[in-house]
Amino acid sequence: MKKLIIQILIFFIIQGFIPCFAQNTLSYDSTGVAPEGNLKDIAWIAGHWKGEAFGGITEEVWTSPLGGSMMGSFKLVVNNEVNFYEILTIAEEGNSLILRLKHFHGDLKGWEEKDETVDFPLVKMTSGKVYFDDFTFERISENEMNIYVVIGHKDGTAEEVKFAYKKSN
Image (cartoon, rainbow, N blue to C red; front, side, top):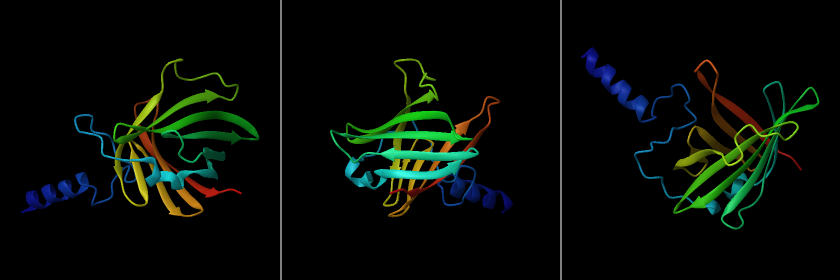
């Protein structure tokens, strides 16, 4: 009986019915087919957003859908100095979406090689969330949004980080 209960518990954890580590993000299964998605369903991401993370102020700006994509930028400022930037896009590809980004130091020297991007395929969409591979946008209200990202560390560990944003005027 105890073994059956453990198997049922594992099943519900895997299916996402019971919260566990990284409960706000999902990983992409490269053996499956990316789900359908389009930009009109996530146009709520557009805007100028501000929050706090990593001991500083975070700022994210997203454009409205145009030309099959949305464009975003991210900036982290710590002690009144830019720590790093990101340039991001969410693009329609086939019948799905993909989020791509590039990192830059404060002096705009890139982290990734010139022709490389960090890609996050779409995993799942609900009315208030869009899940990319280990990267989730969550609509809280018209003026609040959370972004959850799984960040890997040099020692091989990873953690899910929450960015709580409020829309800025």
